[in-house]
Image (tube, rainbow, N blue to C red):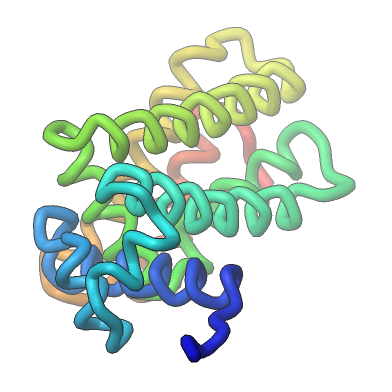
Length: 189
């Protein structure tokens, strides 16, 4: 008699494997076979729960991105304008661990060649851009798009720049860059 496997637990294991493989070697290394090997199951055990590699990627990436969105929303909760903006940007560049940075880097690198990754990244970027622009508008800054663009470049640079030397810049250095950015767009502490 086949043993019962909890569907949610299996999908969680598959998603965790996708993210782990992607952060270690990139999304091109994520296959149904590599995920099955990572979770100690057969390929048919994986395809029983996900119909294709694209579905597997979508489920895993969407879950991971939703976790990050929830964290960002928690950081902004109850805040408005400049305070919310600072909370969101600081969440993005100060709280993520190395595995999270590696996930985003893998997602960014993989998106041009993987329509599923592109769609998930675009959905997150739309959410992010809307929040950044809305919060910048709430501050009264007149050059909203300029300020939003500058913040996006700084956030992207601090996240991706962590891989230049193999480790993120120290927190104090990242805070210095953020302080200079806040002054440049007219949000001084």
